[in-house]
Length: 169
Image (cartoon, rainbow, N blue to C red; front, side, top):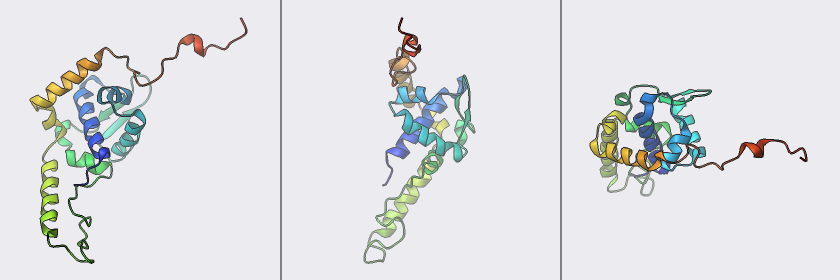
């Protein structure tokens, strides 16, 4: 199966967003802090998620991202596809040219497995994951672990004095 970090991070970030969406737009820096995903990587992922119509952005103070639809209407499969990932267990990418430009002996097995994985992921929504008690327990643990950290934990602190021009005084 060719599900890379990109797909896994996209699902993780979208689930985090879904869990915190009720309080208004969520800043990517908050997701970055809670899920320990690079802010610049999240920006790339959310650009694709926005283009796919899964999230909406709000600019300005109090801005961030919100789900474009209710969490129960967004499947894990949609999230993975939005970041250009494919769930494919074949060697040939489903083209049927796996062995000497023809299907290999187990080609149909891998095609069927890919279809079943896709169906499985289409049947799981962000909302159904949110309803899962074990997912909630992990989310609560992560929230409590990171509650004490400053919101900009991944950025270097800068004092106001450092921003003032030095006039030789």
